[in-house]
Image 1 (cartoon, one colour):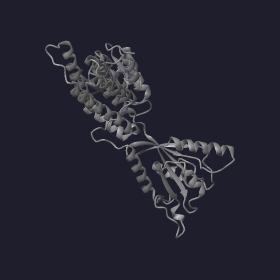
Image 2 (cartoon, rainbow, N blue to C red):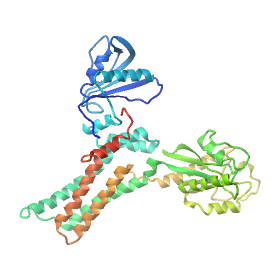
Image 3 (cartoon, rainbow, N blue to C red):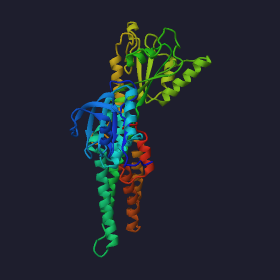
Image 4 (cartoon, helix red, strand yellow):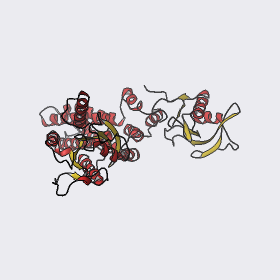
Length: 450
């Protein structure tokens, strides 16, 4: 639902809970009058862009000692007048001040409403607004870098604008030749087809970039598999650098999957500790083994552990035969217990979780697998969300229809129909021509206060 731009909105912009500082944000034409009604200081001269020390009071009673920061529109985040009240971080204090703001005429802001106002006031396009959400919610350092670049440099918007301009020029040539045939020559179909090819290539590169960078946005799963007592839980704890899974000498201690997250090469990883896989008739253990196989099927990478002193068993070979060798890293654990003259497999990483020998090699192997899965085009480090991907796919289909029309003997004006649809979708992607439903879906995912 589109909200009124005429009212002044207010919200606590910092996270809930006890903290040293909380921020109450106001935005709208009455932001300063509302703030000045509850803020007092000895000197009353104020300039935008500066902090001012003073007190929040209610009917002459001091509530808190605060700092006030003023922004004059359009030189603010939202494009409207904005005032921030920096108070002590207790929930009682911040909510008390927020209620005072509402008492003096503000309305409680909805999720994402400050950023929505920034978008509606032309401070950013829709993809930049979505980058703000990425900055707030992402666990990925690489997505953080991409979102920051788009917010600052408008990298996605600039790329789309180039394609839109080419399509508009093409559309204009065709329409002009149709409407004014005596004054404007019909453009050559070969030249139109060439330009459409260039635009198709541009959209295709964007789609491919989205596919390559999907794991940067969504992360990936790494499952630790192996037979019982091979050291899976110990490796799980070692990679996390803390005791998360229970480790004992008794085989089969882990009966269910356990997950934790860590960052590898700027990508969020869900690390999965699984139950040991072996032949058993124990119903509960069988359920754990089934979940281990489920975890392996959903993982992008598998770390398969083998008890190296025992050696490579027939059942290990049966398990590995069911795994993709391209995404599996085989680790011979308990290297410190290996007898002299043992058989060495060149494609294994030998390690000892107990002595931490070989852990760096395991980590490096994970990095190499991840990098091979997420190779970035230096000129296309853009990670699209699902809404943006859908728009790009529809643009691509429209351009294919236009290309088919231009290569046929159909009248030239039929090319303008899919071109119009493609341009409309590009405008929707950028937020230049979109529906209230789309905007609501984008901004309702924001936190209150942003």
